[in-house]
Amino acid sequence: MNYKMSTQGVPDLLAYGQADTQLRSVATLEKKLDQIQQRMAVIAGLQQALNDLLMNLALWSLLILAIPLVVAKAIAGVYLAFLALVILASFEAVQPLAEAFQKLGHSVAAGERLFKVTDTNPQVQEPVAPLPVPSNTPGRFSLEFDHVHFAYQSDEGQVVHDISFEVSTGKRIAIVGASGAGKSTLVNLALRFWDPDKGTIRLNGYDIRQYALGDLRGLIGVVSQDTYLFNDSMRGNLLLARPEASDSEIEQALEQAQLTAFIQQLPRGLATWVGEQGLRLSGGERQRLAIARALLKDAPLLVLDEATANLDPMTEHTLLDALDMLMQGRTTLVITHRLVRMERMDEILVLDEGSIRERGTHEQLLRSGGLYQQMVQLQEGILSLT
Image (tube, rainbow, N blue to C red; front, top):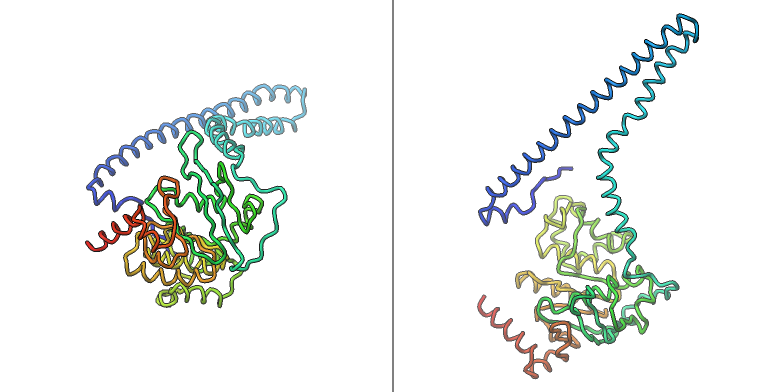
C-alpha cells in the first residue's frame, strides 16, 4: 500500500507568500536540533568511553591483585576467570543507570502529565443502575429540554440559557441562529458529552442521565458539518456505525445516500482508501458518506448539525433530498443557520445568544416580522447576488 507524505498548511503558506519565511524558520529550528543532537552524541560517546575505561581498569586491577594470590595458592586458579567475569558482569548491570538518569526528567514530566489526565474525574458519570434500553422503534421516541442552562467554564457566561422545547415522536424541530448562538452545544448536551448545569434533558420522559452512555448514544444518529472520516476504506468508515451490517444493508444505505454511482466509479469500490479525514473525497462525497453511515446505524432519533453547511447550492439540494429520506419516520432535531426547506419543519426555534427568542412554524415566523424574518430576507438577499 502506498502512502503519500504531505505537509499540512503548505497551500496557505504558498497563497500568502510565506513559504520562504517558513523554510527559514524550519532551517533555524533544524540547526538548533542538530546542535543539541551533536552535544548529546558527544556526551554519550564520553560516557561510553568512561565506562569502558573504568571496566578495563577494574579488570586489570583485579588481575594484578589476584594473580600473586593464585601463584601463592592462596586461592584456587579456577576462581581467577570467575572473578574476572564477575567484574565484567557488574559493570554491565550498572552501565544503563547513567543513561536512565539522563532521561529521568523526561520520564517524570511525562508521568506527571499522564497521571494528571488519568486522575481527573470525568464530568459525565455513568448511572449506578441504568434504565433498560428503550425499544428501537422510531415512532416511539421523544427528546425534551426542560429549562436547561449550561456554561463550559464556571467563570464564563452561560452558552445556553433556560432552553425548553420538546421534539415529539416522529416530529421535525429546527433550531436556527447565527454562529455562536449555542446550537451545537445542544447537540453535545443531548449526547451527554456534557451535562447541563441546571435543568433536565429527557428521552421518552426519563432523564438521559439515567441511561447508560453507550445505550443513549446508540439511539441517536448524528450527521454533523465536520463528520470525521478515519484513514480507512469506505467500508471501514461505514461499518463504524454498525460493524455487523451485511453487504445488502450497506448497499441499501449507499443507494439511499445517493452514493452507489460514485462507489461504482472507484477502482476498488468500497475498499478504496479515503485518506486522513477523508481528504481524498470532496465535501459533498464526505457528507453523503456521513449520511450513509447514519442510515446504516438506523437510530430512531436523528440529529442533523449543520449537515449541509459550506456546500454549493446544487450539492446542498442533492444532500437535502437524501436527508429527507433519512428523516422519514424519525424524531429529528435539525441544527442549522441555512434557512433551506424550513417549511417542512413542524416547529422552528430561533436561538440568539443562548436563548430562544422566537418559535413557531415557517409561515408564523415570517408573519411575525421578527429575527427569523430578518434572517430569511438577509439570506435571500445574499443568494440574489450570487
